[in-house]
Image (spheres, rainbow, N blue to C red):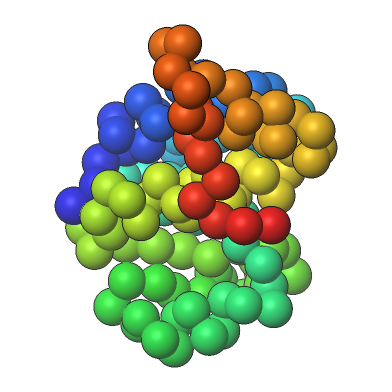
Length: 129
């Protein structure tokens, strides 16, 4: 099970990302674009996700993923139940969501940045794009 605090810690140093609270809901943005949002009860995470792939994702794992409400279907967006996600899956989904809203040069520089002087990439390129 993943918590909002785990997500918050993971995105804490993502370039250009910042947290806001809108109508009692925690959201993460790059500029004015929301790439993560949590339900008020913090049980569901909405995230940027390619429209073309979301039906397959929801059909493959309906206990874990849901389509957004009808008015949000026009956006690149999907919903995930936090209690069904593990930490690795959350990191992959969140990193991909952030990568959808920042320029390529930002995420490539971030992925290549060494963590604490190590030779390995900071968050690596877990998901190829």
